[in-house]
Image (cartoon, helix red, strand yellow):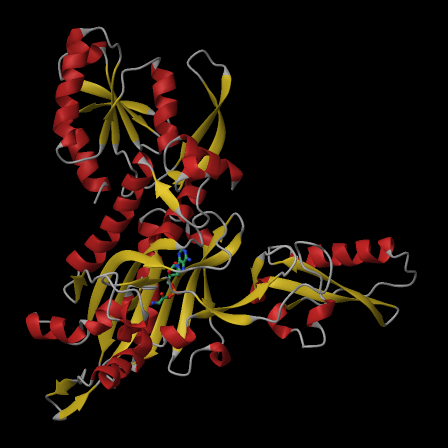
Length: 498
Ligand code: GAP
């Protein structure tokens, strides 16, 4: 993970936000390569889902919506995380990420230990229990720890659990509900009547505009409304780089189906679509898995939620949630606004509120997944046969920030540079390309490997001296080189970049 973060900074993919002022926790900027990569992820999703399907249309709703939207959706009352304060260190924790255990020696509780959630929470608690026993010079047999999260602590146990910041018990408060929506005020007056929220999800835009879309387009059930846009959540503990941040981008779709439709079949079809799409942008199947939320943990209106999980370096984590939400959201907005959100069934001559399947994913999480999956360090031989290290990002050509680099063999040979410039200008009309004439050719290849550029095209002496006007095409992954004409290069790009 450290290697990925360091490369992402060094090569201009991701910077901490406002870095010259010390950064702002949970916010990030995307640099020249990062913003191209992000745009390509968005474009692939939009093209595959909205443009290439006949049953999905696009939408771009406002970030700040009427505050009643968030009352009806349940976010004002319930979009909360359990927050725990440490009164001594002033640190704040999410109760469900703060783990603890009693330290039990010879069947007797002699103290408590705590640790923040990680891949190794159990091991860390066990090690802390052993240290506790040793420091207090307690003899006897230590029982294995029984990790619980802080929401499971009783009133009597809370004062006994040490704060992860100080290591001492007595300073942690009972958990309280902390609403994650960012508040702002609309207009010149700053009072309760002007309070509004930065949206915590894009989904509500699709519900609130449902009738507008139905009335102004020719959509027929089943159909989807899809949107890409920024969402904001005041996460208590933003972490794992861009995995959980406070400002992020979502790609969500609400797929509306008849109330009597086979929702489980439709749900499964969308899970498969999402998995197939992730593989189409280069994520290896071996890193993907499914997690079905247990029935007892679902919201009362939910029929089922499956998360597509990705094996990040810090653990297997949620990438994409696909939820069957019944007709809860449209129903809520109908009640709150007084405007029915129904369709008319010609067959039964009855009105009904459509149900919905919702695939919801974060662009930043996909970007982190492709960075982590694509990153490799390899030993390779240079032109003289010496072994050197190369760092490469094996992005799929679909999402690679730069598709081709055009390299004139020498920068002071006019015949080479003018041919290279002509090709570069032509490629530039359709693709993100780079022109690089600085340094030895091997160095230039390495630079492009680090940027994840699938192909380099070198304009060399054979190009200008031999018939055929061919270039050397160098493949990023195999490092194999072959000669190619301009027409063949465009055909290759046409096939691979879509
Ligand atoms: N409308 C449903 C919804 O928003 P969610 O599971 O809260 O569901 C959907 O969010 C997706 O958005 C997640 O699967 C994740 O990819 C992304 N996401 C959620 N919170 C995020 C955060 N704090 N930082 C980055 N991505 C986040």
